[in-house]
Image (cartoon, rainbow, N blue to C red):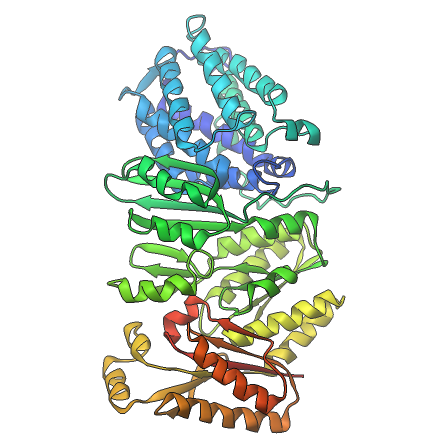
Length: 597
């Protein structure tokens, strides 16, 4: 097709390929967008989030002759795959567009302009407190120009060329004061303008060959001189997707807006996408529970992202998963990056320790008709984390729960291998062959060594020694939860209950669970573990130890008192175990973790 030829009717395939071209342009510049990300918080991930949104849409849509069918599929995929504040705004804009067009296979400019105007209204309605000088203003000015000039041209090629110039001018000239001071434009606006630029270029040239192989590389941010920026008020960039019937966005918004800012509630009566910045993701999700099935959750730690970009304490990043039981204040002090394992209550999905905490978990276990299950942290989450961390740290060490108990370590190792292969970064994924308090002590020792200036090579040599010096004794109060979770047969559970059998479990050197003893009462469990610890300290000097428990602080304090008498010092910490461990250990369990010097 001659590139001078006009387009007076937009069909599905032309729009699809122009969308691909816009996505390609945005993805190619995601690191540039990340670098200018200061609003609503300077977490350096707007480009990554927008590119991730586009990648999901591309992977879940295909070209169709009908404009309506194509836009509907893009809108549906956008709601499913939206990431970040700008991604959710983008998704709502396309959802609004899909709701505002007729069923024609082709659409003329006047109808397109009318649908765009309605899409802007949909977008503003989704946002709790719309901020001008951002992506919103650029979208609005772009649409206004098209609406006001639709009588002058029926040609999409000319209209996209001229309206792109307006969008670019708006991005440069209608900025928030904070962006003017930092000499940057809004990151979301930049992403949208790049997207329009790509669409404009395709409509001009109509070159589909250039779009056959969209770049799927993981983009690493280039190192640059960091400008000191302020952290936002809230810690977690939190997202959710609800599915159900007759979902009421206004009712949902009214229920949850107290939990933070940057609230966007997008979508339809059957599918709602939510974005919020909050300090209380678990309470936020507790409020959402019951409105519909929570089929997707995300809660990025913006504080840790901000520290990584602007206030790193070390050159080595330390990563673990949520099966590591270590108090939040220690994770914060040492800037440890924790990736959550997934917990499922039927169709409802939660992120261990972040969107579900022990305070809510055990209540939900009793209330829920289905017993929770767990699933490993997926490879893509590790790819994203390692990509981000590799751009800010010299190297990464990642310590995980036993590979014989979860696939999380294997996913971490695969992701590390991929980043190493593509970018030559130093990342060591290590199987701790343990979990819970013992993994917590290994992470703590590694964190202290990093703080003291130990090299990556020395750490990877010593960590296996620390793993070998770790012991874990788990006193299980009742087998009821192991029966419900399918770990123990109903028959064995019934017999154990009848005889009041309470097992003591440890983790062997291969990282597998092992029954080492049993008792017939809580006092009996404590006596047996006292004896095991006394035997251990005869031949080992204790570096430190911890007590962890499944929502059973009174019994944990009894264990702490006994251990202090035996070992001669108090525990490093007493901690409620992560819900993902609680799924299998059950309420009331107490465990002692030791590490020799």
